[in-house]
Image (cartoon, rainbow, N blue to C red; front, side, top):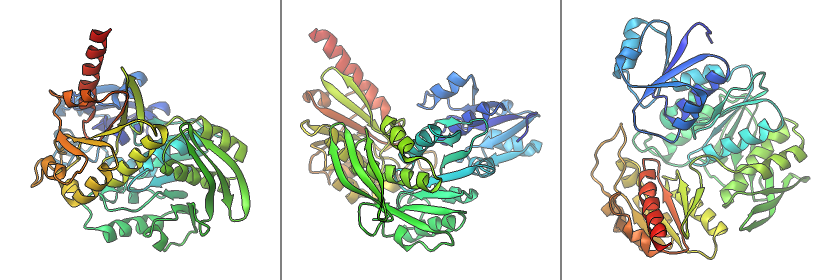
Length: 443
C-alpha cells in the first residue's frame, strides 16, 4: 500500500469495486474512479464518502496513479490500455483483494448463492464484538483501523477467488452457474476444491450440498445444517411472520437459542455458518445472539417498501435456487397475501442453460410476469428470449415493459417481488410511480 499514489478504480460502481474503494478510503488512502454515467445502487456510498467518480475517459489516466481494474473490463478498455502503456501499476480487482486481506484473521465467503447475505451477516456480527474490516458484494465496504478480522465476499466467477488465501472459508453451496465460463458442475467443483486447498485454518460448509460433501482438503471441514450428521446443527426451528428462532448444537454441546429477524430457511443456514466461525474464534455466544437479532439485511436482498396498499420487494435473485429462496422468504413473512413475481432474466446463456429450473422456481409464486432478458457487456445477444421461458410457466408469464406496467394494477393488498441482477429496478420505479399517481388520484 502506497500513501503517495492515487488509487484509480476503472469501473468503480461495480459492487465489489465500490466496496474496495470505500475500504481504501477509510484507511486514509487517496481514491478516485471512473464508470458509466447511469445511476447505480452502489453510487450513494461513494458520494457520501466524497470519492470522485468520473465518466470513462482515457484522459483520466496520468502519472501518479495506481490502477485497479474491474473484472468486467478487458485490457482493451481505453483507460486500462493507457495505464499499461504508461507503465503504471495495474491490478485486477481480485489480485488487489488477495494482497489486502494479508495480516488479518481473514474469512472468505463463497457459494453460487447466499454469499452476499452471509458476508453481510458475518460482517455485522463480528463488527459488533471486535474491530472488523469487510467487503460485501452489495457495494458496502469498511476499512476499520487495527482490525482483527477481515470478512470478504469471494467470487467464483472465472475462478477469481483463487487470488485469495483466507484463514477460514464459508461455502454456502456449489451449483452450476455462469455457463458462459464454467463447462458444468464438475468444473465448478474443481474451482471450489482448488480454493479449499488454499484455506489455512478451516472450512464451514453446508451439509446438505452433495458437492461440498465431496471436498478433499488439508484443513478440517465443518458442516452446518439441520441433520444429525452435521457438525453444527439447528434444531427446533420455528419460523413466523417476525423471523426465525432455533437452537444450535455443536455435536452434543448446546450453544444456545438464537433469534433472527430474517426470512427463509436459507437465513437460518447462513446464521449457522456465522455461529460456527465465531465459535472457533472463541467469540462469546451471548454477543453473537445479540448481533444476530439486530441484523436487518443487505442491499438488494429482500429489500421492502410499502406503496399504497402494496408491498414491493426488491431482490438480486437471478438463479433458480435464489428465486426459490426469495419466494420462500416472502411466503414466510406474508403467508396470507398473494405473491406476484416479476423476473428479469439475466444473460442469454444462463436463461437457456437453466430454463426448466427457472420455470419450476417461478411457479412457486401465485402469478408470474417477466421482462425481456438483460444482456451483459460480455454477452449482447443469444438464441433465446423471455417468450421461450414464458411458454414454460404455468402461473402467467406475460412480458412487461417499462412503458406499460399497468397489468400489475390488477392486484391489491398483495406482495410484488421484483427479482434480477440487471436493471430490474427501472421496472420497480415505473410501477411505483403508477401506484403513487393512482393513490393520489383516489385520495
